Image 1 (cartoon, rainbow, N blue to C red):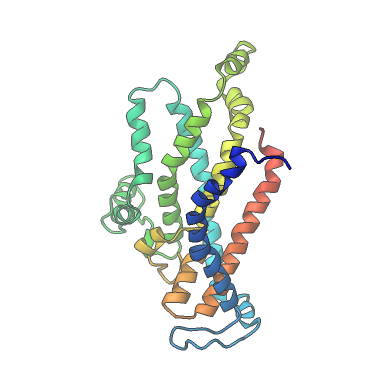
Image 2: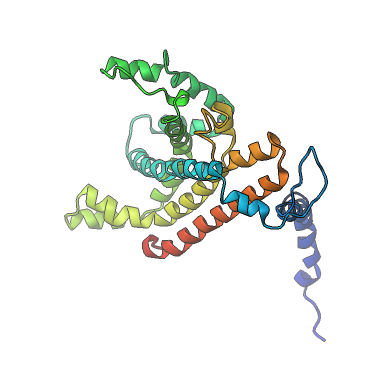
Length: 294
């Protein structure tokens, strides 16, 4: 028999280091997920903690629930903030990657919102979007808009105001990641393109953008997942209102579970949310073969 190497003998050390983290994943992720999956087929409620098997009733209820479809629509509008934020972040990164006065300070200012408290950010924007005396509407009146939007007080504009905050909040993080990607691009490639007569727009679109496409792909996946799961921002600003106009799927799960105490139905919504995220990720993973250049 061959003698085991020292590395093979010491393999248990690696498992020992990984074990605490795996126990945490098992206790706080896998087991609760399995518990939630079982609860999906029951009518379990806090007020009536008896497990009664109901089969597909919760799933049938979900696809016949108008509030669910409204939450799905609001989630789709909220997801629109991700590509917009990425586009703006890429443009800002292009500018800050050049010789700009106070470049370091500007980078820090753009990144500061991302490391700020989400609740604090929410309250600041509530003051900015205040319909009657908020600075944003005052500026709109000054430039001639007589009846500016009601923002969070109006069902037709509340979700779009949330989008604006999310774009602003994620801009700094996306910009920093893009900056790191831009600094990895070889200057020889850019100089060769300039010598061949390519303009700035052509270089950006034909060379720079394809070279940072893996970064865009990573930010797109993580951004969409984080946005779908987002909760604290909307909860702090509107609580899902007015009249449910800013209730996205994650907030719908929370309200169903902890406001109406319908844990079985909330579990059904949460598993649909998981499937929704999974489908989005798969579509991106398949589609990236067409536009991501490694």
